[in-house]
Length: 181
Image 1 (cartoon, rainbow, N blue to C red):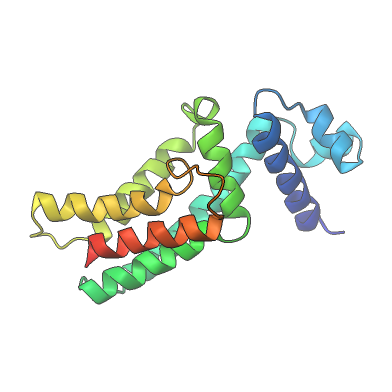
Image 2 (image 1 turned 30 degrees about the vertical axis):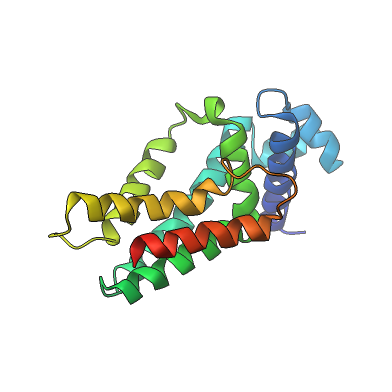
């Protein structure tokens, strides 16, 4: 197993433990035990829980920055905004980013003052800005900002256990698409 595979495996195991037990209640020792490695082996990649979280946030930021660059090429039309929202929703709900969003939602207090949180906030503001023309009214800009948050709301507002993740995601996307049309 190469270094990147090991790093990714650590991130996956730690992320799941942070979701299940909470960030504060999970120790590096427990992560190492779950991985079946020594603490020294874990420390080679991440010597603190914060560095694991930073790596997860940085991975998310990298993906969002690529999405921003792509979105800058789209026309600021209803079709362009809809294409962006679909891509954003897909990005948000696939792979590790699905679990990362659950981690963010369940561990907000642990992340509030995290150094990478400010860069994440800046990116979200940029994403919202990409959905509006410079001459958009305040109400139009607000609707388009709410489109981004509609996609996110599926994680923390729609908590009905009888509804599948796919149904929640589809509902969030449908609302978001209405808001950018």
